[in-house]
Amino acid sequence: QVQLVESGGGSVQPGGSLTLSCVVSGSIFSIDVMAWYRQAPGKQRESLATITRIGITNYADSVKGRFTISRNNAKNTMYLQMNSLKPEDTAVYYCNSLTPTGTPFGSWGQGTQVTVSS
Image 1 (cartoon, rainbow, N blue to C red):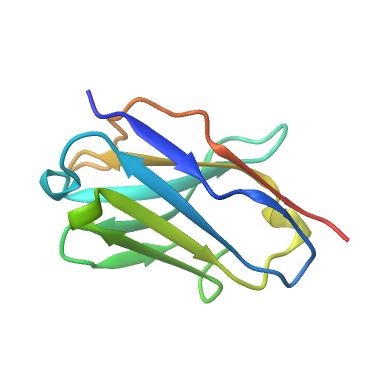
Image 2 (image 1 turned 60 degrees about the vertical axis):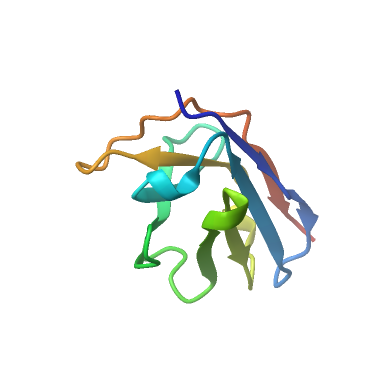
């Protein structure tokens, strides 16, 4: 089963930036679609962005224009560049691999905490 490890979270002030990383066990090249999610306290896990093997991306309206998803197949790593962070972006961020129908099939990692506060 695909194992994923997220890192790069932290505490930033509103308007700040962070870059998250997701390292995948095995070859990321064999995975067509990868995705970033987040879960805020008391809320359901939210899909933020997806990227295909050839770099086609899609974003949730809540992060469009502020977040950028990318992947480096040679390094088995996916990234999420987050700019113009807002307090409502505070959450635990997760990554996963998706089936062709959009269902996550990797093992959920511990996630990485992002806190945006002044």
